[in-house]
Image (cartoon, rainbow, N blue to C red; front, side, top):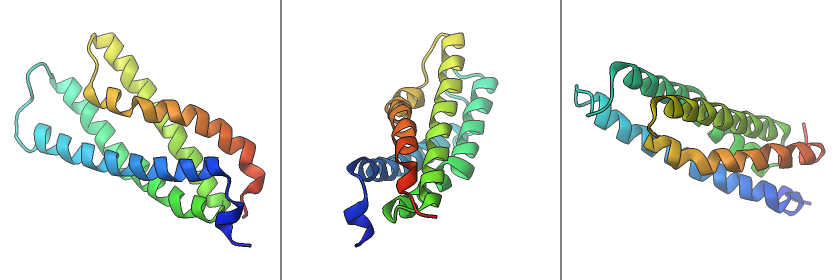
Length: 141
């Protein structure tokens, strides 16, 4: 019996969402890097603290979140426990970073475009954490 025939439909959905998340994350940060940091100036309405926060999220996403998302995909495809683990890590990172970003935005009184763009992924992660937890016994070591 091959892995795909045993893979629940929800896991397949998570795989596709993780692929989309990885692509959008990479493209988003490339565009931010070009706009904010390659130009040598801060855009209107952005102070040094906001730029530092944005830069911190960019580095963390590129160093941790993006590789974790990418590593989750083959493991989920093969229904391996490492895929489950990386997917859960990615979900928790979405929830953590979006909570942090939205709290910052509410405090400052404005909403960063990235927090709007990535909000659906954080909301999806709420479901995915629960779903993967319920499916944990189906993943092989």
